Image (tube, rainbow, N blue to C red; front, side, top):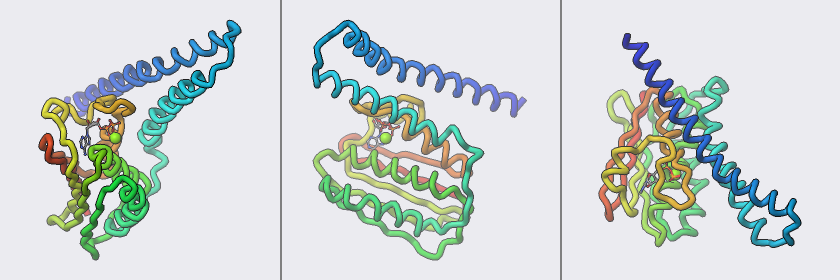
Length: 222
Ligand code: ADP
Ligand code: MG
């Protein structure tokens, strides 16, 4: 029964996700179709149409890109990696963007942790997503502190920002598909990250205070 329950739960999540995707993609599709009909009807060329169509296409692309990460679990590329070097790669990638947004980025990474068996591309995707959320929470700049420490038989990684924080009702629902407070958000990033970490037998915990900031903690078995 235990496995049946888990199975049923998974099905309902898949169903929820499918309904959400259909809904989220149908809106921009409806808009695109409207423009096609307009042009078929002989409407004169308007560069504004193209701009809106581009934005709608970007939205569909964003949704499909985030979902692709979930869609190919069997294509996992497992390698043995030391977390500090993996995180450092992402930090290096992110430094110029943070700089551009007036965000100070610090990384205090414990070296010499045992290598862990992981899909490094997927883990990097997770770190990038959490850093992106932190950045987006500080539109006027701020700071992000990344800390990696050994915590018993696990590695503990924290991304702490001084951003807007998360309202308790949103915090309680974090991980649900399409939960977003952003005008151009997909609301898929966190769910995908949580899934990837859980696929690595890890755990994600979020602490947040409105107006003060957010800390996303990840624990991964070594
Ligand atoms: P998206 O970024 O597309 O909105 P996510 O799944 O990445 O979707 O995040 C869901 C929501 O959680 C965001 O819209 C935001 O409200 C909240 N959130 C996540 N991370 C943070 C953070 N570091 N600071 C403030 N809010 C956050
Ligand atoms: Mg996001």
